[in-house]
Image (cartoon, rainbow, N blue to C red):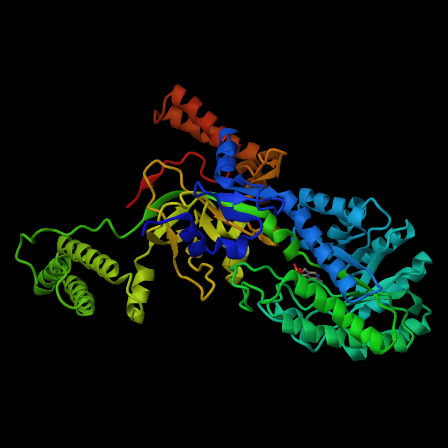
Length: 640
Ligand SMILES: Cc1ncc(COP(=O)(O)O)c(C=O)c1O
């Protein structure tokens, strides 16, 4: 049966991870639904083409701010619904931790929502706090301050309190009690604050080390009790309003959250019993994102829905409070990833391919050739005829090629014959692969063959800059071509970036069952554009990204949708220029131009170049230094 968009949807599991923001349209292109509505969408490929016509080249990051608002609305509504269902008498507030994505336009979008909905922001450092204090214009917007603190950090928090903002510094380690008490005394202020507890219950997934006894954050129960006594003695217990815990990012298994909630709510209730005037329970972040669309407890997924998450939190807190006749507290959630991951898509173009199809079968070997080389030719011919057992041929190809290599090492095989052996080896393996590709239950050695014979598609981007979590912790992001989805993708490929680093590649891909080592892609036509999108990259990636090989920030294009469902480019944040990245590593570009000038003049004096060439050269140098750090003027080619 011929290929269709349904098969592409299934292959890349787009409905699994993309719903309700990404789908495949009838033209075989990825459609974006910025408001999460099935009928309101536009084509990502059309948008990329329109951006290209404006002279903005890939790679770039597309940001759909409407998706952020939609995510915040969904989270708010899930909690409202849970509060109603369980007759919870307290409130819920979303607190966005800006470390997850601190970009000004992103935080502005979220602050607009927060100011309207009594939601708030979380800061984890002094720079984050200083920006958050200024950004939130409403005095009802709560600000939670995590991270280790010195007296200056506390002073900034208390300044916020003094000007009427609900700022909650959260004590993360015991010594911070003293620092807070001393700072408050110095400023003659009664602080309102929280304490982070270290739960014995472990979280789940890749970030579970943020929880448990060995966690780097939070206070043990013993420290908590000592802290309460200290606060009492200093007459500051009345400010202890918030109890905080955080089980780590990307909670994959709802069961672990339930257990943590039981432990945390029990501690909350016990603290109330001993006279701590708590009013807020902050359950931290961790609401996961289903990156592979499998809806399971795998690292790249979650085995629960947003509504289940909200229900469990509200229900567990209510149960504990009701059983001990305690007032229902306000619930803060610090979801970051689940708010911003969906809104950003990295788009890059494929520059070229390196594959194994280039190896040809010679008709005959002219010169008297050693036996293993002749054998390789005979096997290759047998494979073309489709003779006998493929596995037997496979083993013979391997052993004969190794013998040819040995003979070359010993000086009995010329470099031309070795090249012939290489051609026969790879073309035989490719042939074997294509014969048995569609068979089920492939032997392991053949599965490995598929991986090792996959194509390398070179993408115009840097893994280190744009997908640091893939490089550092093997996090999986969904990747698909954004067009040609009506065509069958027949190539097995891995993706290499343009850094000079062998780690600069993507060779594991999402799969609902297990990680895939290759991605199905379309044959790359000479001179045609081929664009891939890496989705759900809005959380953590940008600030973590680094300047390896001096590839800088990509351009970010903020896009909304007009009333006719057309994409509207709201603003463009230009990516780093060469000049900028050089200045990050302390180069003075004017100095570089001067130094280049004197070398060019030297070349003129020694007649290596003429005056005109020297003028052109320096102009070229100056233009390149003002340009984008990525490849701007590429030509798609079938490569060697
Ligand atoms: C204290 C705290 N709150 C919130 C978050 C955000 O977590 P997530 O992005 O998984 O929601 C983090 C991140 O690990 C955190 O450390």
